[in-house]
Length: 241
Ligand code: URA
Image (spheres, rainbow, N blue to C red):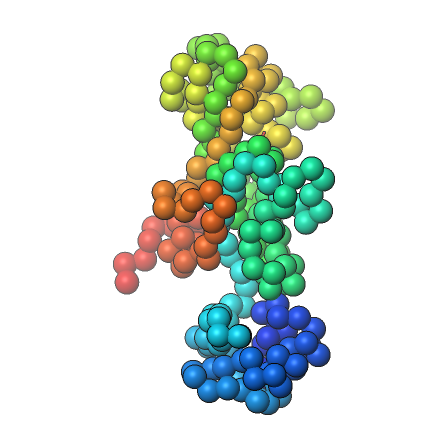
């Protein structure tokens, strides 16, 4: 697809049309080592890499990110008591209306997806889509057989019509569980564990769909999802090429 440079810069989050024009007129934008001087120049977005003030950016129609959410961050653009996860990504992404794909509590760590693609966000947040999510849970008290079977057979949460059931629930230790759920109700894991008679003291999401948090992604770091990550997320086998 071809677009004017100023429109490309605006769409990639570099500011208003006016601000993007100024960037070009200031000589801040280069493509393939050439300083671009004309904001109205038409440029192909296919495989486009450009630099702004010497920093390279790849053109992306949409943003699909994974983050290792650290403790003490809120999944909100208007955090109440803690920092926002949006403070951890480049400001240009915020101009693109980047959203969390489902929220984690401020004290929950682990795999968080972010995107500016409404269809994608719906696909991975709608309870009707039944995307499995795996949580590692640290408990206040040693877990009992009765608690594991209650979580597996289903518990009634306050003000919910249907019972909430774990797809699977296994012990990782005397006071640690790994549980898979495929809904995503408000505080679901904590409420399910409370309804089963225990209390969550630590919560970490390790997997969404078929995508697991990479071991080398440190708390607070993020990266763009690769085509392979997107396939894993959707539960599709990785392509052979
Ligand atoms: N369930 C919870 O209770 N909290 C989270 O952050 C995620 C799932």
